[in-house]
Image (cartoon, rainbow, N blue to C red):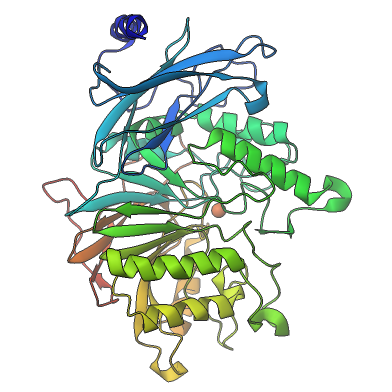
Length: 524
Ligand SMILES: [Fe+2]
């Protein structure tokens, strides 16, 4: 091992002595399956805990019939001297030559650097960090969703990679999209045609799509810079998925849903730096992350764990108590976790896919039935728990909507006229590249209508893509949205300024807009 480290250090000096997390020299367009040999999909880390973190890479071999042995090392020093842990493992075609290591025995709240290598190739350098324990003054994270290669460039990823002030990146789903080009986004117009250019059905399809997304230079940069905490939404499977099918799945022409779902899960587990339960039939990705005494993050799976089929807004079954978006086991887990988080942590964060707060039409029916609005009984049960346990710091972080939104979550346990009181706040991420509205006039009209019927929506922006930053201290939480005027060009435009900032003081559940400015420490 010692000799290998020496060889590695020599190689490091040849390749790059200074860690860089900016855009790599990889081309912006997709690399096909016949790309060059080596670590061409970069490195990633994820699911940090106080003593461990998942490290990820993929080795692209010339000969896919042979196995490949990959070594790894993690160290607190950027030059990887004094390794904290190291090892070696073999990967094969059976796992698409991906490599995943759970690096354990690490120190809490510590920044680390890592690399992989084979006899002939050296991976890029990755940076990651563990979660802290004990008293924690501040947490700053990015929350993102809906990265669609055909809709545009991942400028949000590129900008996040250049920051040096985040603890981790939270991806709330739609990490890939399943469509052929032209179905949802015209990638061919901007040199980003989906690979393969067909709807994803088989394991090979899903693997190739992940390989394309991970060939993107901005994606590689953000993964090399920060640990990722990810959960899937529908497009990692098919549009409007639920446990037994999807709106965009036709058994007659596309085969068995369970087989497609299994393929999607396997490719996700292979390509995402996530700790997996190894069960393709019953995957479990709902899980918790403790950030000292400051916060506990509960990451949900509102898609595959147990969601019942969506019904129309006028369907009498909509409000049935047995209809679930979580499944029985996940709801029980979440209830226990919320109680424990209320006792142990100043803030209780829920990271999940679809809009949580009630959004209604004029007649009181839900605006969206693929979100929690389509499963009101589960939401009401959870809000009853939040009210009874007097949770003082619940924040819901949401993806899917392709809009930036700040919402006070109405207290639905009270009579309608008393629901001005709120029990939590919800912050919604814009798409990384998936668009909200394309027509500014229509967006304005929609906003007037939406806020007229839903006064708890304090702000909504529907035209731009980007990312959100959440910063927590013991006194307050602050969310800021960083938006780009254009994601169709490879050239990153200057960020729209001033970015919108909303603040909630602990225990108040009320949103205040604060003047956006760039603090001396660079964030949030
Ligand atoms: Fe999406």
